[in-house]
Image (cartoon, rainbow, N blue to C red; front, side, top):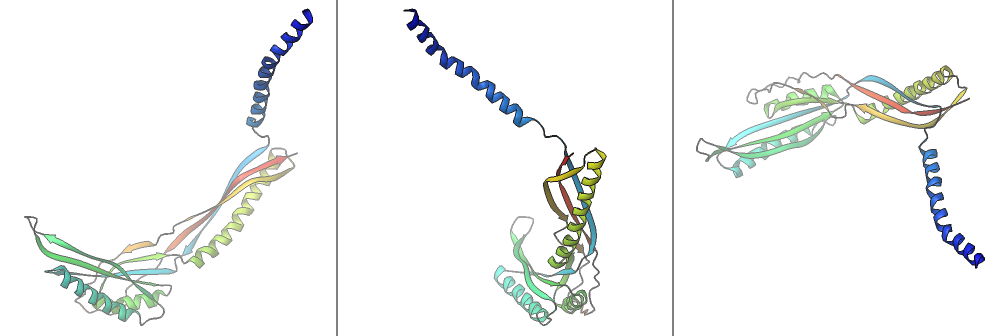
Length: 241
């Protein structure tokens, strides 16, 4: 009788003993995983350079008023076609149509009194002189709305390649200096990120519109500025004895 009782008691207690061991093992694993690594250093290094803007984008426009939208649309299209025909004669400048809008103009009573419309043509080139000359040639057909400058993909890529090498060298130098200062002998890179910063959108310069009814074929005065390109290298290193 006593032997059966002992066996039954042991079997009944076995699940309870197993359950009490599981959370202890889990807690130990959790503490091990959450323990912060030793000898890890976070660093960041950046390099910047001002690059001359090498692309100019000139927006030309023509506005007109009409009694009905159909005739106004036709007149605007004809004006745009004339400007594009003249602009396409220069291989150094690319030309494309811009915004085209026709909208009603209302009186005090809210009734449509007239229709107004606007059409645009856009000149773009890396040859500032050619773009300036062509914009002046088209001044009798369309007015200059604004001039925008930007970096070409090639200029930005060249600048980023040079800056990336410099930023990486600076990052490694900082890692080496900090490793020795903390009393370690060596380091290894745990993770690293290379970020590119700088203006991507064209930098616009608003210009006073020139009267289209006043013939003026003189080149439009334009001069580009500079865009700042920045490369940032950030990450962490593992220092070792």
